[in-house]
Length: 213
Image (cartoon, rainbow, N blue to C red):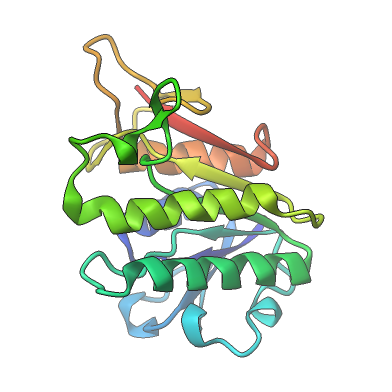
């Protein structure tokens, strides 16, 4: 498949790049700073700033799907607004180009109790809250979309960490997936594998899913 990838040098995006290339997909990385990605077989790099692109839809032409690991920067004082502005731009471009969108959100919108999402719990770290609230709003906007946009949002486990690719994860929907120790966790390599699995064999169209051990 021909995949447009946004955020290919970030924590999740870099793992997605490796997973996509390892499975033989052709990747078009849309990067603000192209110098951060070295040339390699199967990879095309284009200079694109999601927040300042005049015609992002044109960059998706010929792609089978766009996978977005867009991140406006955790230290960005305008993180909430910039994340939503970028996410809206990506969704609009996918809609105009008629390509599938798989967007990586946060775990904050997962339900940890009836009517309570993780981001609203007292223990949720304050330094992550702005980004988590923005990711929750992105999901709300996707669900409210009444166009033909073919979207999927992926929420990682509550603890997303470096680690090996095991392929031994499980999928969930609106609630975190917990392991035998009562922990919700997954390696970034396994999260990438779960996302590319969804790309290759869709199970969650116009829906959210999560993954964990």
